[in-house]
Length: 86
Image (cartoon, rainbow, N blue to C red; front, side, top):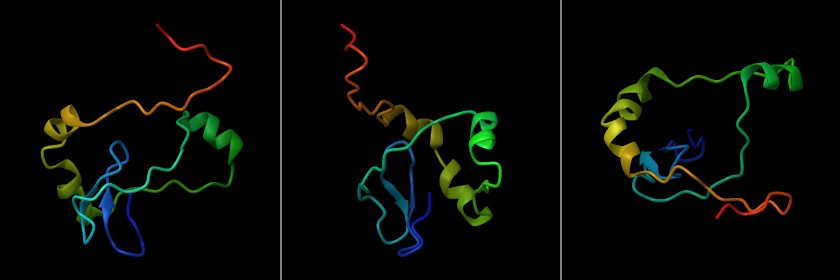
């Protein structure tokens, strides 16, 4: 993800800025939803799909696997309809 105001690029998984003037800072997480392309297309038939900028690919791919091993991958949002797992 890229912040248009500062030009910082951040990790969608950790919320940390990985380049630009905010590099190394944790950005505020925004709740999001993951769904299949088919579901999204059905919900947003005129939606736009974004892709990475070519200039960001080297930054995003550098040591990605090593960095992701250290990244938290689950963000808990308590749902009263689902009992907690023990």
